[in-house]
Picture (cartoon, rainbow, N blue to C red):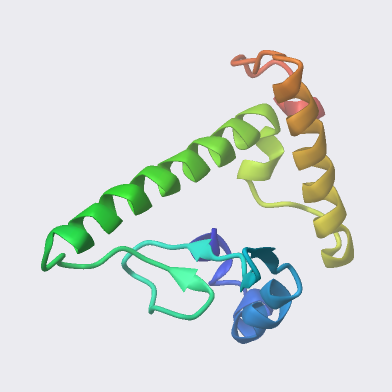
Length: 132
């Protein structure tokens, strides 16, 4: 998702502070603190909060990592694809005050998760696009 917002001035200023936010979301396993990580493509620099695939895997371990990484990233991309298919307004420029954007996106995600749990279909026609 980073590439989607990296050209916006607000996001560019805040990008250097992403790790501060992510550290507040740490979870633990077997006494080890595990921070959330963002999955990025090879165009991004490796950061402590961003994982990316090996550009040229040198051994079987790196090839296996890339395989698992790409599988995980595809799952995330499909999930965002379903979210944007259900709420198509998320795919275009959002005409909203910056203060409201988090609430709008969080609301869409919550409603999407409810629809997914109840197996509601995603409409594939454009009849309701203008009313969303």
